[in-house]
Image 1 (cartoon, rainbow over the protein chains, first blue to last red):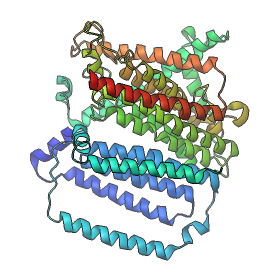
Image 2 (cartoon, rainbow over the protein chains, first blue to last red):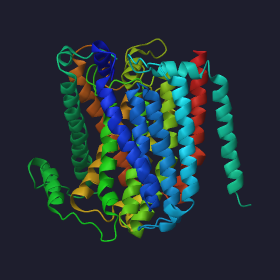
Image 3 (tube, chains in turn green, purple):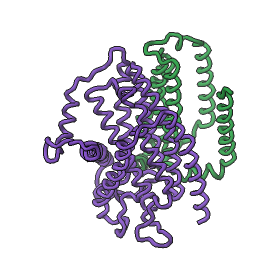
Image 4 (spheres, rainbow over the protein chains, first blue to last red):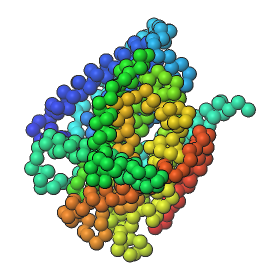
Length: 177
Length: 346
């Protein structure tokens, strides 16, 4: 990794290789994301989602954020998708196409997606318009942990309490007695 | 990142990468072959008073090639109702996750594939990807046995991934790093009550963690007594039922290679990795001895895995889940708290 970054920053400010691969992976991700919402098989949708989330992890790697990339794989691919697939297979894992999956509420979903995209695009362009991201070396995990446990300790604790509450709440809801 | 050896310094980035890929393939396939021959063909045959391979080559050592040849010439069957792409891709997802696991294991002071700050965390993350492959195999086969096997496997792998990761956290706290290479040197530079003759292998201070890791590892590998997912008396072979020929061989290699790689990770975390007491920990000779030391430790640890596999009866599904959630995870959490307190106190 660092050899790659060093080579890139040595000859120019533009990371050519990174940009090319960013484009290729972004195109793959967009294609996969479209397949997630257009495929009529729930399991296929989940598997396409793996491609999208894996692509996000690779993009994080290109930004030098190793820790975030690996967390992305561990949490989203290793846990969220697996639970999703597990739930689908326990309930309605039909092999063929299930027309009702893709057709229901398609208009509202499209509207929501377009609005969400617009809001995020405007927010991102507004805040990062001319900022140049300089990446000389991968972000060290020590740095991440130091900032979590000093500067961001309050949000971190708040999030963990919130997750605990959600966990307890889920058990209370699921219990029958 | 630590500077590579002079040899590697002279090679271009892509040349180093190709070398590492070849090395990774060798590490996975050689270890898988060694384990199949030593443990499955020979050791277990002695335990169960079977003959085991004797005819092919000296001590039956060519039996392995014969088996591979047998699988390669079998027809690659796909059930008619199966989801073709998902069915065909599943074994590769499982195998790729194994190949990605091996890259974090250090074999000597300069003999590493990836020297990353997040080493052990990366290993835990990619090991969880194989679950998707198993679910793909279970669902894609369009068979009830396969689906049940896949579901059982997933339930089990999720349950035992937690104690596995929690057991590792004790080591990470004590070493103060997630870098596998630095975990080895932390053990090499450590001392037992001031005596630094053999460093401080973490099995001494993290004995509980080691036990938890080995139990959870046995379950992650779906080896008996945790082989509910492929219980042959109920489910034929679970999610592998519909596979034949080359793709069955891929699952088979994946099973043994993962056993080897997980043992290598356990050897690094708890047994001191490639370090040999008495030799300076950045001595160049360790690049030669280190891999052999690691291989010895891997064979020793996998011996335990296969010993358990062939001598224990199978857990029932509810017992299996109870063990994970009610015993292993609380013990692992207590271990983390104790390690944390002792780390601050000393």
